[in-house]
Amino acid sequence: MLDLCFDRVDVAIVCSNFEESARFYRDLLELEVAMELDIPERLATGAGLAPRGFHHLRVRAGNTLIKLMDIEGAPERGTTDFAAGVRWLTFFVHDVQAVYDKLTAKGVPFVSPPVAADDCTAIVCAKDPDGVLIEFVQPFPEDIEGAS
Image 1 (tube, rainbow, N blue to C red):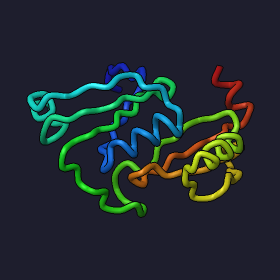
Image 2 (image 1 turned 60 degrees about the vertical axis):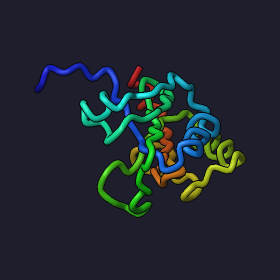
Image 3 (image 1 turned 90 degrees about the vertical axis):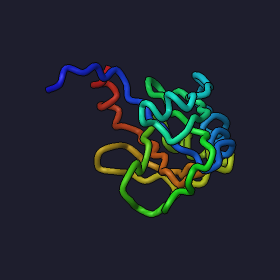
Image 4 (image 1 turned 120 degrees about the vertical axis):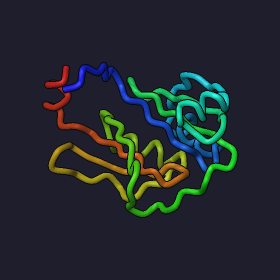
């Protein structure tokens, strides 16, 4: 195994409509804003991050940062159907039904109501403005206790 330090994994999302995505993650999901900054073109192109400089907003979900990219000329998402690439982000929560009720009241679109699953108490999926599934999972109580 490689000797790498994986304290956390951050995810970057190229937004087709940055303001709409920022509202979804920051305001509707109520994720804490960790940082907002501009990435200059020399860094974006030099590191192979993007074809030009861009602005991004970092929101915190536990130990993970979700980086929302605002880049001029961002392409539209090719499809919201099942496809190659990042399909969903998973958030582990204490009460799926409470999350579903709160976010439904805020107008967050869900694929279906919460359902039971073999590997957890409940699961429900919403969609972000670009069609990325946002999965909320309520682990079995013994899984939570065992992780402590």
